[in-house]
Length: 185
Image (cartoon, rainbow, N blue to C red):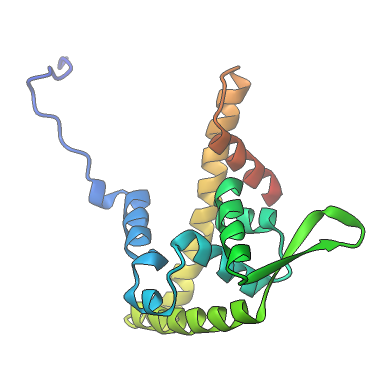
């Protein structure tokens, strides 16, 4: 029977470049909205604010909680983005007639103009980025990414639930993942 490797023996390094979450994170980092010079020429908004603006423009009327769920950003990050966009008069918020606590977000005219410029630029970037894919390959990739997102939420929520069931304290991020998971049902 072979004994376990000692500290002085070489272990085979993990193939990080073949690790799917790592590859996705690298691509995500490259494509951050704040790094794109075409977007920078349009606006000085940061990535957080741009993600909120895009969600308000696409799904309006929408609540901050809905944006947090759709983007998988924590509610504090979304709240800061909303505050910045309200201050720049790019979005407005309105109370529901039957629920004064929940606020729905809308683009202002100024926000709509910026949204259109940003989405036009994103459309060009999207077409250029995926230009090597056939329509069928693109659809397959999109479908698989959606499946990966659901699988990731389920996997991480299950890990957090197992820890919680074992009596261990879990972090706010882990609680958020459990909330996302519960909304999938």
